Amino acid sequence: MHASIIQSLRNNIRGPVLCPGDADYDKTRALHNGMIDKRPAAIARCTGVADVRYCVNAARENDLLVAVRGGGHGVAGNASCDGGLMIDLSLMRGVRVDAGQRIAWVSGGATLGDIDHETQPFGLVAPAGVVSETGIAGLALGGGFGWVRGKYGMTVDNILSVDIVTADGELRHANKAENPDLFWAVRGGGGNFGIVTTFEFRLHPLGPIVMHCAPVYAGNQARDILRGWREFMQTAPDEFTTEFFFWTIPEHDTFPPDLRGADVVIPAGVYAGPADEGERYVQPLRELATPLVDLSAPRPFTAVQQMFDVYLPKGELLNYWKSLYLDRMTDEVFDALITVFNERPAKRTPFVLHDLRGASARVDADATAFGSRAMPYLMEFNSSWTDPGDTDANIAWTRRVWNDMAARFSSGHGGYLNMTCYNEYGEGLVKETYGVNYRRLREVKREYDPGNLFRLNANILPA
Ligand SMILES: Cc1cc2nc3c(=O)[nH]c(=O)nc-3n(C[C@H](O)[C@H](O)[C@H](O)COP(=O)(O)OP(=O)(O)OC[C@H]3O[C@@H](n4cnc5c(N)ncnc54)[C@H](O)[C@@H]3O)c2cc1C
Image 1 (cartoon, helix red, strand yellow):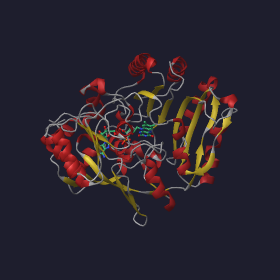
Image 2: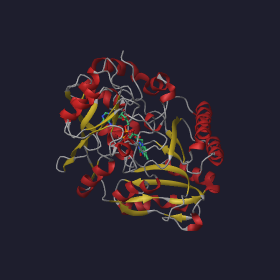
Image 3: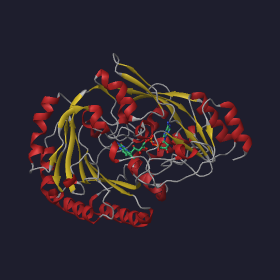
C-alpha cells in the first residue's frame, strides 16, 4: 500500500492506523483462530461511522483488498488479509438499551458479552451465540444460533434495522420500510453488502437466572445418552434449546484432576422460562445414567454465556471447522458420530449437535436471506489442535469426515457458513447454502457492491 494512502488514513480518521512494526500491530491483527497469520498493510481502528466511511472510500478509490473485523471469531479467518486494509471495528462496542420498548442499539464491533452486560440487568436478552467473546456482527449477519433460539429465534430473526456503510461510502439505514432489499440481504448474507456500524435488535424477557442443564456423562455411554436425548426432545417445548456436546474434559483447574482428559458427552441446554419450571423440566436429562459430574444449576444467564470462554482462549487453538445439516438422527447416525469422534486426531476437537426445532425452524426460507430452516439437525465438527505440525492431518481428517457424513446423512442445504472454513469451496458451497435465495442475493449485491469490494467473506458474486 502506498505510503500516501496510509498517511491520508492517519490524517482523516479519528482512530489509530497501525502498520507492520507499530506497537499493537501484532496484537490487533491476531484473530481467535490461531491458524490465521495474515499481515495487513494497514489496520484502521475505526471509532465511528465517519472513520468507516473514510476507509471504505479510500479502499474503493485505491483498489485495496478489504477485510472487515468485528469480534475476530470468524473461523475462516476473513477478518484479516495479507497486504490490504483491515477495517477494524473492535473499538466500536457501545450498546444502548430501551428497556421499555425492548430494543437495543448495538455497535458493529460489540461482543455478545457487551450486549448481555447491558441487557441482562433489565431481564432482557438479544438472541445470539453461546460464547461471550464472539463478535455480534459476523454472528448476526450470518445467522446466529444460541441458547434462546427455540423460544425467540435466531439472531437474524431479531434484527429490526441496521446502519450500514455500503461500497459507495454512503451510510444507509435498512429496515422493513427503508431499503427493504438490503435489509433482507443482511439478515443471513454475511458481510457481503457493507459494514454494519449499528444493529437494532428486538429484546425478549429472560432471566437473569435461567435453568442451565449440563450433566456430564462418560463417553462410553454416548449411544444411550444420545437415544435418551433424542426421545426427550420429541416433546420439548420452545423454551428448551439444546446443544449436545461430544467433548474431552480439558486440563483445566475448573475440573477435578481425575476427570481431566476423559471423553464425555453432555446433553446441554437452557430453559428460557422460569428457572424453577426449567429445573423440573430438565430433570430427566440429568437421570439418563449416573453422570461423572453434573454441572446443571439455575445460574445467571451471563454466567452460562461465559462458561466456555476459559476453554477457548484467543489464538491458543488452531481451528479448522465444518458444519453440516443432517436430515435425521437415527441410531446409524449416532454410531457414525461416535466412531469418528473416537478416531479424531486431536483431543481438543469437540463435536456439537444442535436439535433445531422451535421458533427458529418456523421461519420461511425466503423471509430472510439466511435460507432454509427445513433441516432438523446441525452438526459442527470443530477441529482444534495446538501443534502447527498437526495441521495437515487435522484438515484432511475434517474434510474426509464432512464429505462422508454429507454423503450418508444430509440431503443438502450446504452448511452453516459461520461455523465453516469455506474458503476452499468457491461459489459452490455458498450457492448451495443460500438455495432459493441465491439469485436474489446476487441482485442485491450488484445494487450495493457491484465491484465486489467486500469479497473476503462467504462471497456472493454480483449478478
Ligand atoms: C469460539 C466460537 C464460538 C462460536 N459460537 C457461536 C454460536 O454459539 N452461535 C453461532 O451462531 N455462531 C458461533 N460462532 C461462529 C460465529 O458466528 C462466527 O465466527 C462469526 O463470524 C463471528 O463474528 P465476529 O464478528 O466475531 O467475526 P469476525 O471474524 O470479526 O468477522 C467475520 C466476518 O463477518 C463480517 N463482518 C464482521 N464485522 C462486520 C461488520 N461490522 N459489518 C459487516 N460485516 C462484518 C466480515 O465478512 C468478516 O470476515 C462461534 C465462533 C467461535 C470462534
